[in-house]
Image 1 (cartoon, one colour):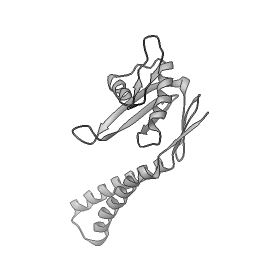
Image 2: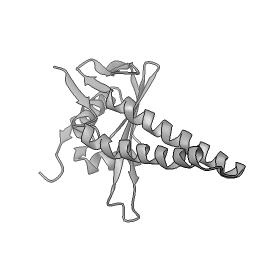
Image 3: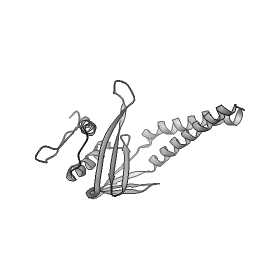
Amino acid sequence: MTAVFTYPFKSLLGSYLRSFFGIVLTLVPLLLLNPISVIVYMLVFLLCAFLAYGLRTVLRHFTRFEVSGTGIVMSGPVNRRIEWKELEGFSLNYYSTRRDREAGWMNLKLKGGGARLSIDSTIDDFEELVRHAFRAAVRNGIVLDASTGMNLQALGITVPQSDGSLEYRTAGR
């Protein structure tokens, strides 16, 4: 059975809008005004940053992850594949956008077979994707750092028992 995970347009809309307005707000002064050279350099730098951010958003929009019993495949503008038996790196990080850590996002990083994948929590069914990868990490004996362990628990995923069995709990259920 293959599960497909994509970034929904709704989660990308804010990124598209930020990129668009950033490009407009930096490009318009460059085209219509005659700013001094220091300001030109700053505006060109910001324009390049917003263009890169927009390109990253477009790449995410057209990227899909297919997870099966044998591995995970990223397809779209960039293609990568990690076989579960080759998985050698697994980390789950949380990035807060507020001091009270109430808002933010998670990022799953996988490494194996010469490929690296970075998947953030705005993707559909992120928790299920993490569960698939975590099972493979446990089978491969990957040692988790404390931060990854805490973030797995925040998702309701219990770290393996001493006998190697796995328990999965969905947070809030």
